[in-house]
Image (tube, rainbow, N blue to C red; front, side):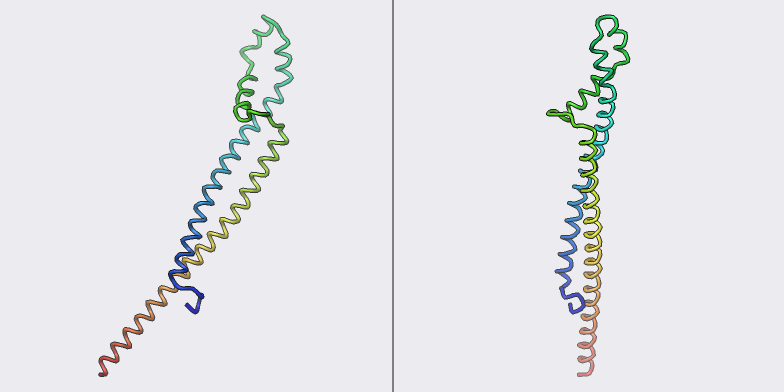
Length: 154
């Protein structure tokens, strides 16, 4: 079409492609969001772990009855086991984990920007397709009307 420089089929195909990219991007964004939530939970565990480490060391230095006296209140091993499950090789520092979460948020923000651009492109292409198809219907209607008028005149 002269208005857009593409046919209705090309605009429709491009709109479908943009929509497909958008859907793929949403899946990736959801994965990153889930990872951010996991890492934020791990950050809470890590802070708890680091805050209770001195108490753990003291607890481990106690023997017998003194250690049993504090056993009911002791939750260090649960936090430590969760962190070891999440980080089997090495437990990171709070700063390292915060930096990783920050990178993930930046990546998610970039994906949001890309999503917005793809959404806009998809909408524009869908609108262009609709307008092109409407224009073509009007042209066909005019052509039919001209043929009808010619046949009436003959």
